[in-house]
Structure formats: C-alpha cells, structure tokens
Image (tube, rainbow, N blue to C red; front, top):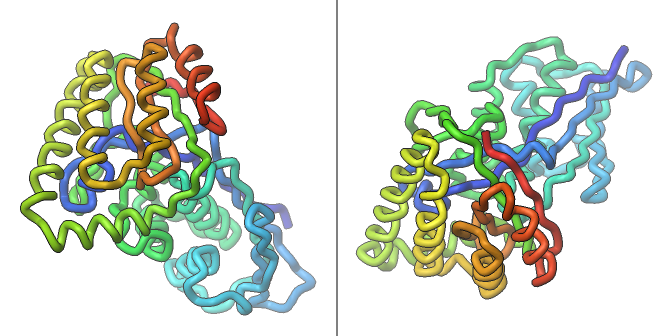
Length: 313
C-alpha cells in the first residue's frame, strides 16, 4: 500500500491577537515558507489497531496506546477515528516533521494537527471537508492553548488570508494589492497558553482596564481590513504600531520584541508589532518591497535568530 501525506502551512497574525479571544476581530494569513508534514505509512504486518507516532523534532517514537490521552498527536488521530466512525483501524505509522518554529506564534501545533488529520483520513479512505478538519484541529488546539481563539486552525486549514471573529462564519480576506511582511524570530519560546491564561486572570481582576484595550484593537483590525481590501497597504504601518502599543499595555510584549520592532522601524519598515501570544516568539514588520531585504538584515544584525520575508497576496 502507498503512503499518504499531507502538509499544512504556518500562519502569522497581522492584527487582533489576544483581543480575538474576547470576541473582537483578527486578521491572519498563512505562511507557506514554513510547513508541517504528516505521512501515514501502512504497516500490513502489524496487528490491527497498532498505531505508532514518530515525531523526530520532539524525540517522539511510541505506540499511540502508550501515550497519555492528552497528547495532542494522539488526540488528533483519535479525533479522526471518531469522526469517521472507526473503532479499530488498520495498522500504520504516522510520521510528523515540521519547519515551523515551535512556541513562536506561527501555528506549529495547529499545522501539525491539520496535516495529521488529513493524512490519517486519506489513509482510511475518508474525505473530510475543510470545516470538519478545522473543527477537529480546534479540539486538539485546546490541549495546546487551553482557551484557543480558533484562528490558527481556521487560517491554516483554509490556507487563505482571513478576517476572523470567534463563533461567526469565516470571512476570506480579499487582498487587493499584495504587500510584504518581514517576520523576525526572537528565538525565545513562549507557549501561547501561558500568555493567554495570565491575560485572562488580569482581565477577570480588572475588566474596566482591559475591555477598552480590546475594543481599540478591534477597531484597528477593522481599519486594517479596509486598508487591505482597498489596496492601501502603507496605512497598515501606523496601525501595526498602535496595535503593538496596546499589546504592551496588556502586558504580553517583552523587551526583545520591543527592540526588534524598533529596529525594523529604524531600518525603513512602515510599522511593526509582535505577533501571536507574545512574551517571545515572533514580531512582524510591514515594508515596501524594496525595503524588505534591508529590514530583514537589520533584524538579523540585532538579535533575530531567523527572518522570513513573505508576500501577502
């Protein structure tokens, strides 16, 4: 029998992180330059129901029966079994690899889940809709993030720019004129669940402080959507700068992120902000095409462990 493979892109949030958890809109785009891959290899000589998961990046090589129920990879496989009504599958090995930085705000967990769900479903001869894949991946996201917004699994599953409001129908974002982003990685791993959880505690203690911050982020996101759909990408710079200031006030930035944003602006970026959970991970800068290489070089010369330049179209 042949192997069955599926891939899924990384993602970056342009506007609205954290506030999206509280019902405000967010904008996110896929990042195809980094991807997760899942490959299902049939094991016809193994006993029925035997499933092995191999993920070299995290040093995992175990039978699914040996993994705890809250292991995200095991949960993704079991989610497919439940969705297609299979209690005992033919034996297989699921191999996972990824070039998406972990705990960096680029959706590594969701991408692995989406790729694994699609590969396992293909092996079982079942076709899942994008909505089904996204819903299953969202359930796995709860193991990674506790109270995920749902944006990661959505943008990664559909592999298109989206305007996202929790519990509302997906709105695909029409990019009238392409623009360039430079992503700078601080190299500091920062699990999203920690920043989200601590912000939730702060919000519960002082909602009158945080609700206006979330409101303004929502307004900025709406303005950004208008700029993107009207082909006015230069307007995104000041909006990013203001969004970053609001994230600083929420307490989810870090000196390293602040410094890289400042360096990007000094190198000619139109604007910059952290992206994702914060406290580490990545920042993004919007730049004119001719300035993007200069911005990337400045970030690497400062302290960014890697940069990725992407064209959003």
